[in-house]
Length: 173
Image 1 (cartoon, rainbow, N blue to C red):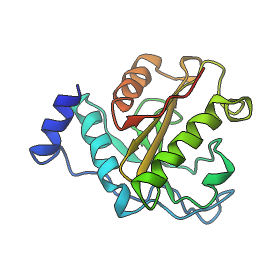
Image 2: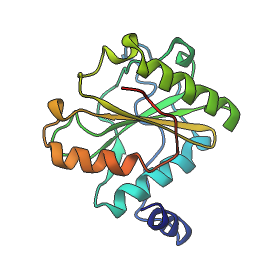
Image 3: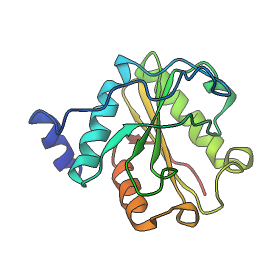
């Protein structure tokens, strides 16, 4: 699968791409924050291409997402995207943009540790599985819970593809 994604990227990518921005800075959001920008574009391109190979499309989220995250993420620019699935609440992925790859690695470790903890997991269904992946200065976070998915087969397939993107930072169950 990774070889397919790498080939798609090297051959010029698939489709027209996804605009960075998502809903990271919606004025009426509970906690508006700056949207991820150009440094996160590579991660977003890899994610978009991987999903396209699997027959899925990624688009900016249609509503603001306020996920559980560590306090250290308060000022980190982020954008929300969704895989186009039958259920408008499925397929959410957040792209966080750090200043450097080193800062992103530390941030991904922090996020994975937080999601492994009781306070981090409480905002998700009990059967939620997470992916925290790092691509350069960007961190991707997504989750899947069969109990909450409208079409669990499609949502699981999209989640499985998203777990191939980035260096995994393990979230313990």
